[in-house]
Image (cartoon, rainbow, N blue to C red):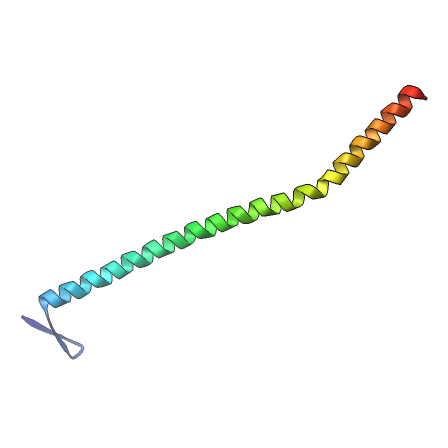
Length: 80
Protein backbone atom coordinates (compact mmCIF):
# COMPACT_ATOMS: atom_id res chain seq x y z
CA UNK A 1 0.00 0.00 0.00
CA UNK A 2 1.39 3.40 -0.92
CA UNK A 3 0.95 6.46 1.23
CA UNK A 4 1.21 9.96 -0.11
CA UNK A 5 2.71 12.45 2.35
CA UNK A 6 3.66 15.89 1.22
CA UNK A 7 3.73 14.85 -2.41
CA UNK A 8 6.01 11.83 -1.79
CA UNK A 9 4.78 8.27 -2.27
CA UNK A 10 6.04 5.88 0.43
CA UNK A 11 5.18 2.33 1.38
CA UNK A 12 4.36 1.38 4.98
CA UNK A 13 7.75 -0.32 5.28
CA UNK A 14 9.54 2.83 4.14
CA UNK A 15 7.47 4.91 6.57
CA UNK A 16 8.37 2.53 9.41
CA UNK A 17 12.05 2.85 8.51
CA UNK A 18 11.80 6.63 8.52
CA UNK A 19 9.99 6.60 11.87
CA UNK A 20 12.63 4.29 13.35
CA UNK A 21 15.42 6.55 12.10
CA UNK A 22 13.70 9.63 13.53
CA UNK A 23 13.31 7.88 16.89
CA UNK A 24 17.01 6.93 16.79
CA UNK A 25 17.90 10.58 16.16
CA UNK A 26 15.74 11.67 19.10
CA UNK A 27 17.43 9.06 21.32
CA UNK A 28 20.89 10.21 20.20
CA UNK A 29 19.94 13.82 20.92
CA UNK A 30 18.78 12.85 24.42
CA UNK A 31 22.09 11.05 25.03
CA UNK A 32 24.00 14.09 23.82
CA UNK A 33 22.04 16.36 26.15
CA UNK A 34 22.74 14.03 29.08
CA UNK A 35 26.46 13.95 28.26
CA UNK A 36 26.46 17.73 27.95
CA UNK A 37 24.92 18.10 31.40
CA UNK A 38 27.49 15.65 32.79
CA UNK A 39 30.33 17.68 31.28
CA UNK A 40 28.85 20.91 32.65
CA UNK A 41 28.80 19.37 36.13
CA UNK A 42 32.40 18.19 35.79
CA UNK A 43 33.49 21.64 34.58
CA UNK A 44 31.77 23.29 37.54
CA UNK A 45 33.52 20.87 39.91
CA UNK A 46 36.94 21.57 38.38
CA UNK A 47 36.31 25.32 38.48
CA UNK A 48 35.39 25.11 42.17
CA UNK A 49 38.55 23.14 42.93
CA UNK A 50 40.64 25.64 40.97
CA UNK A 51 39.11 28.55 42.86
CA UNK A 52 39.86 26.81 46.15
CA UNK A 53 43.46 26.16 45.15
CA UNK A 54 43.87 29.76 44.03
CA UNK A 55 42.47 31.11 47.32
CA UNK A 56 44.52 28.93 49.70
CA UNK A 57 47.97 30.44 48.97
CA UNK A 58 46.65 33.91 49.83
CA UNK A 59 46.22 32.84 53.46
CA UNK A 60 49.68 31.27 53.93
CA UNK A 61 51.45 34.60 54.66
CA UNK A 62 48.71 35.51 57.13
CA UNK A 63 49.10 32.18 58.95
CA UNK A 64 52.90 32.49 59.01
CA UNK A 65 52.67 36.08 60.23
CA UNK A 66 50.23 35.15 62.99
CA UNK A 67 52.46 32.28 64.08
CA UNK A 68 55.53 34.47 64.07
CA UNK A 69 53.71 37.17 66.03
CA UNK A 70 52.60 34.58 68.58
CA UNK A 71 56.11 33.17 68.89
CA UNK A 72 57.61 36.61 69.41
CA UNK A 73 54.94 37.49 71.98
CA UNK A 74 55.64 34.25 73.87
CA UNK A 75 59.39 34.86 73.74
CA UNK A 76 58.96 38.41 75.04
CA UNK A 77 56.64 37.27 77.85
CA UNK A 78 59.00 34.51 78.96
CA UNK A 79 62.23 36.44 78.93
CA UNK A 80 61.20 40.00 79.72
